[in-house]
Image 1 (cartoon, one colour):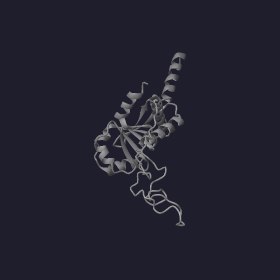
Image 2 (image 1 turned 180 degrees about the vertical axis):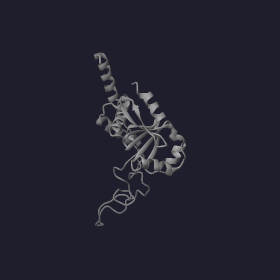
Image 3 (image 1 turned 30 degrees about the vertical axis):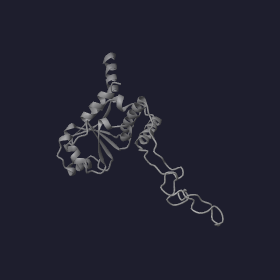
Image 4 (image 1 turned 90 degrees about the horizontal axis):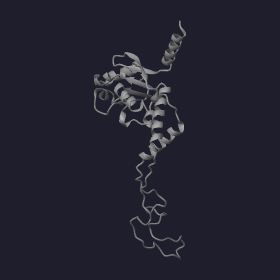
Length: 229
């Protein structure tokens, strides 16, 4: 075999070997391999960025509405409860003092803003890092779009998960958009299964599941958005 052809063959074999693939499922149980975008599922995973994102995510979920009343805000008389001297007891002012039941609270919480910021570059790095982490842990799967038109029967979908050893795993199915369809109707009563739209998907949601399952259309949209960046 000429050297040029050998080199080309080696290049093709190397390219095939380096492809990122995962399993694509069909409702009838058929499986096939699909190729994933390297720019999405083969990037550097930075644990510090992931930790930062999750900290910001939870901080921004806090309402910060907890509020207590100080002795100046509690309803009650400002009269001195008994005279200063001669009673043998400790001296006190009014009944709203923090030492009394129903009195004000010292250094209690007041409404505040807990939100933190993370820049776009870090947010993107965390998102792609989470996808890569899931792929490396064999947590990324694909469902064919025909799953959207399956029978809305919970037991049939559950049986599908049992047959494919997915029943006990915590699963997150990523839909192109969140809307009522037969797949959602069939899966909404399965305890360890959740649905999310592609638009709402974030690094925390990706990491907080064992199996991240993309509808084929959602995966194509994700690849189109991030694949060429």
